[in-house]
Image (tube, rainbow over all chains, first blue to last red):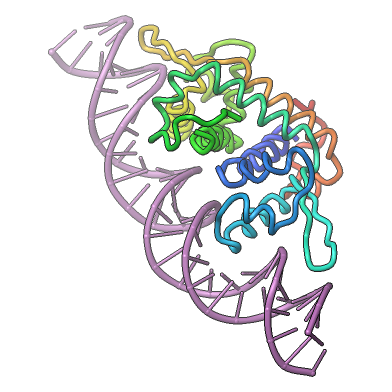
Length: 113
Length: 113
DNA sequence: TAAGAATATTACAATATTCATATATTAATG
DNA sequence: CATTAATATATGAATATTGTAATATTCTTA
């Protein structure tokens, strides 16, 4: 069981371990959005976003409801947002080292989420 | 910056996304342990554990101090343990679905960590 | 200093992930 | 019903991760 739980946790972390999927969850955190809106906000390939949504769906991190032509996604459990927030706290605590870990800084003056 | 932060978060999640590394962090959460003790408790190949420790070190999730022949590891920031605990809460909340996601249950009666 | 203990690193095969392209599905609308 | 819009899926190439086996490094101690 111990082991299964760890595999479960690892699976969830794995689903979270991609910048695009984190972006999706953050965009969804205020409330549901259609796939199309997500694609527009992310400014990425439709197929790519859809694939990342599939990963999040597979791990039950998001739920989706179909309304006519569109599919609306939302974060399944706010705990996931808490996890993301904790990670932000962690980031702030270790800002200096963290900066060293980052390859490069794209746009200097933007709000840290 | 937005983007860098997400890459940073993704990197941390990535480091957490392996059952062995989760086990290591959980074993370390009460306090520091030597690499040898970790290897013994995990019951895994020395080289394999050492590689996972290298991943955790690279992402600064653990710190290590050398004492003579041995290397003692500890969790760098308790926030990481909080993240793991949140994940346990999440697991409990979604137990039923979670069980479906798990391949198989190894040892039925063990304490859930 | 040679031998042994504790830990780390390298190399490589097997496997998994990611993105892009092309194609499929499903619903709306003329 | 043909066309278009919205979304999903399949395929394949490039890349990354994992575990094992072999080797290296660093201390300790005889």
